[in-house]
Length: 428
Image 1 (cartoon, one colour):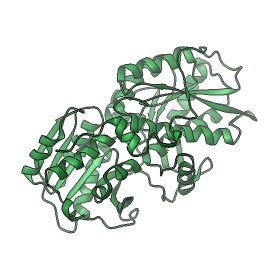
Image 2 (cartoon, helix red, strand yellow; image 1 turned 45 degrees about the vertical axis):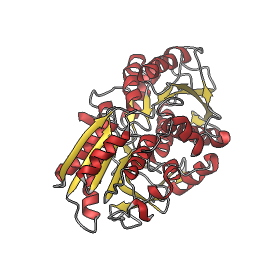
Image 3 (cartoon, helix red, strand yellow; image 1 turned 30 degrees about the horizontal axis):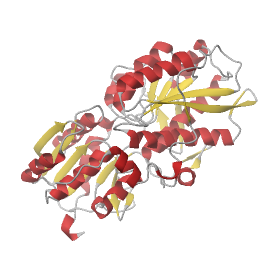
Image 4 (cartoon, helix red, strand yellow; image 1 turned 90 degrees about the vertical axis):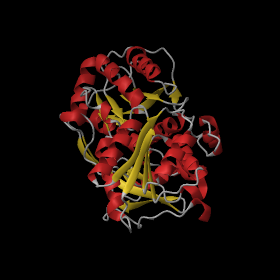
């Protein structure tokens, strides 16, 4: 049985705290500031509620880097241009400690005491769901660059927008892509996941994909975030599925692979979401990461570009220069959130700090967003269960091969064939 890696150990061992790049140069603000009366400032204050500590700190740092790179890019160019004058951006970041209740309190401080002009969303859906009513209460537009649970959108949050398509739009398609791309047809699958927003929605999406693909579901279970994975892996191994699909975040996904290896069970395919597209996943597992599949909606070599970041490859180069690692689709999604806000502020044409009426107008502009970026198209749904979510992007099935994330489906986006079946752990 493998020893679980703590969040702090994971971050220290695999680079999330290396070099100090993660913790600077954002402003980590406490209480204070003004309520924002409309005009009279040289700086747009943008709030963000992020998991900088606690269970989801690794992902929170990824999101922070994405938001920060946008702010740094804008400020390096002189700021956001409004009416012939440029205004710098100041990020006011609050640590929610990976707790939804703390996230709601942080969002309220940013809106009522810091007087922010707009907000960026959290890394996890649980915190984002807690933030949404606060943003609506204070009429502060919020753009979530990370949260993927459909639960964010089913209540139709009037002041919140999502850059990444909800996982129920992507997970089922990913399972079908595995079946379509496999050299020999898989017939069985097991689905497991953490019992929390996003992770359980991911598991449900995978389960839907199993049914739609005609696979036999031999096991399905949800478990607490701090569960011992050894008995779970043992149960899965006894069922001997061709495909193991896992809904969860970064560290837990690493531990699932370790638990399967400890159980001496190698499925023909493993798909996990979210975490494998971040460089820390492959670093944590070494050769054992090879062959693990995941879902993405963006890759650094995508043939996309815009006027803020240039080509996708140029964005990736800038990110790597700033932080020493390749950006994944969450980091890039958070930077895109900044770009969407920037263009909306320019269209609004009002100087900081924004009045309540100006924020309401800004919200109306955001709702009508329909732009092409280095990340792809951003267009928010106007109704239905995905209200204000960006449903314009399509999922990409990716796989770690020789330590690198490569696209394996769809054919027009792929640059490698899917490895199937996987090599046993002992032969790597």
